[in-house]
Length: 338
Ligand code: TF8
Image 1 (cartoon, helix red, strand yellow):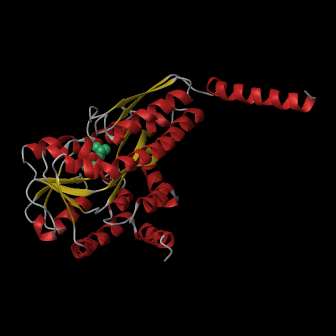
Image 2: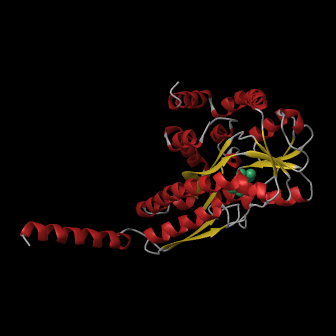
Image 3: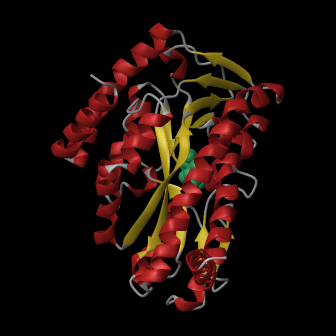
């Protein structure tokens, strides 16, 4: 073996050793992180939370322990957000829609039919606009780390198949606690009722509400098919989840610890989107097998709904600011090659 070869091998071995002991050398303290979420452990949200916990433990050499706590056991989204702001809880993942009361720019993601497909959503959310909106949280005591996918939302109810707008008349429809959703569904003629997700199953079961809207994955994992007969494929909005950290707690972490969390949130995002899309692709067939009656909307009816919903766009633009609204429209035009 010549000198050079020996030198390279030794350097490689050294680098490997360094990588494996990086977590020892880095500035990492023992930490316990309560990571709350609203869906159950068997959901896409639950699987990704578990993946996140594993990533953090691995990268920190076991020093940072994530306790992933699902099924809203730490409270619904709005309550957890307050716990993070106050520093009583470290982390959570939840809907951006429930954050609008805290950071009005988040309403951008509630725009009906904003994204045509997942690729558009990924590009905007992971790009400059998504980051800009996420960074607005910092003034309010929250740090956003990554957008995960909740997904395109579809309508279910226990009354009748919704094939046209008029079918929504008088249907008591649960919406997220968010004014854009409230106004969107009122505009379409439904009797929209805001409720936290954690109360939704029983509200559907007791007929306090007739329907709800969520991605296929959630309709499946939360067993809404047990209490909902009709599913209408509306894809009316793409809904992101966001991984949040208490800023109070975050500011006390070392740079190394912050990087571990931020990297893990992003690798979990990639894991979660893939998992969600794989499950979503077969979920409709699964829901049919569970007894749901599924209908598509005729193209003309989709167009009518879309048209009607553009009414709320003015309200959203005013909420998020005209500059951000225009920047987003321009970015989408660019992505679409227009
Ligand atoms: C909803 C959302 C839920 C989320 C979740 C609990 O309908 O779609 O998936 O809020 O984090 O509330």
